Length: 571
Image (cartoon, rainbow, N blue to C red):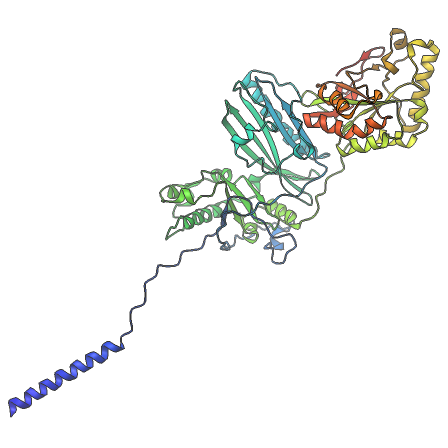
C-alpha cells in the first residue's frame, strides 16, 4: 500500500508538472521580428545644381533679422542644421537679369596666342571695375609671357548676339573642356597654342549687392592647364567689394566640413556617419579655399559648389563614398543655419540678397565721357554726318540702349533747327564735330567763304550745347592745304565709307559697316537717311558682337586731338 500510494503520488506530481509546463509554454509571446537601426538623416542637402529657393517674402524664410542686422556687432551662434532629404537633381535657379551692367568682350584669334575674355562692370563703380579689370589684364599679361606674343586688341568674335554677349548663366560651372571648345568663349587654336579664356556669371543680385563669378581658364593643345573661379561681392555704389572667402567665419568653416562629410557618409550607407577625424587636421586656410565658391539662394540659403573630387581621409577609406558624391557637387545649407556660419559682412550680404529688392546701380558716366584704354579694348569710332535730322533722336536712343558713343559731324543750318537734339547729343557724351554750314566743297570756296562756313557752324553749336566743336569734317572729304590753313580745327576723315547715302540693301550696308571694321577704324554713316537710321541697331550690335568697343573719335585717338592743319582717317 505504501509503495502504491507513493507511486500514485509521484505520478500525480509528474502530471501536474507536465500540465504546468504546458500552461507556461502557451503564455510566452513570440519573439519580435528583427530590423536594423534607422539610418541617420543627412545634415545637409547634396545635389548636382543650385536648388530652387523659397521666393523672397515667404513666411518662415529662415533668416533671423537680429542675426542679419548690419548694425549688429555680435556674431550669431551656429545652430544645428535642419535635416533635409537628399536631392539628386535639384532644379537650377537663374539669377535675375541685371540691366545697366557694362558688358566687356575681348576676342583675339591670333593663332599664336588666342584670347577670349568677357566680364561685367558696374558703370560708376570704379573700385569694382578696377578690381575686375586688373584681374583680366594680369591674366592677359601672363598669357602673353607664356606664348611670347604681345597682346594686341582685336575683334574676332563670331558675331555673338546681344543675349549671349555678356555674363552667360552656367559659364563658370560648365565643364572646362566644353568652354575651351566653344568659339564664342575661346578663339580656336589650330596649332595647339596656349589659350586664355575669361568668362563671367552674375550669380545673384538684389538691392545694393551684386555677385559676379569670374573664371580664368588656360589650356594648351586642348588640355586644361589651370581653371580658377573667384566670386566677387560688390556693394553697387562702391562702398565695398570683397571675395567669398571673407563671408564665412572661421567657426562657420569648421562647422561646415563635419556636416558635409556626415551627409556624404549617409549617402554612402555608413551606419555611423558622424565625422570621426579631428578638425585640427584641417587648417583654416585649407577650409577657406575649399569653401570659396558659393552663392546665396533667393531665400538666403547658402549654396556651395565643391570640387568634383572633394574627399577627406575617412571618406577615402569608405567604400561607396566616391559614387555617393554628386557631379557637379553642390551643397545647400538652409538659411537659418547658414546665418550662424557667416561673418558680419556675410550676414549683411545674405539679408540684402534675400530681400528680393530690385537691383540699384549708381549713376554712371556716359560712354563718351569715360577714359577708354584702346590698347586693351578693340575700339572703333562710328560717325554720323549731315545731321541733325528727323532720325537723329532715334539713333541716340539706339546708342543709349547699348551704352555706345558716337561722333556727329553736324551742318550749321540743321543745328539751329534741332537745338533740343543737339543739347541731348552733347549731354549724353557724344562728340560733336563741324561739318560746315550747308555742305559745300570747301576746295572750291574762297578763303573767307571757308572761314565763314566753319565759324557760323561752330557758333551755332556753341549756342545749342555750350561748347564749340574741336574738329571738322570737310564735305565729300574734299580738303587741301589751303583749306586746312583757314582753321585751327584738325580735319577728321574716315577709314570705312559705307556709301549709305546711295541707299544700298540692308545686307550690303551691314556688311560694309561691320565686316570691314578693324581696331582703330572710323566708320562713316549719315543719320539723315531712313535706311541708315533703321539699320543702326543692327550695325551697332554687329560691331559689339565682334568684340568692338564703340567710342568717340577723340577717345579713339587716346583722348588727345590731332594737331591743327592736319587730317586724320584712322585711330
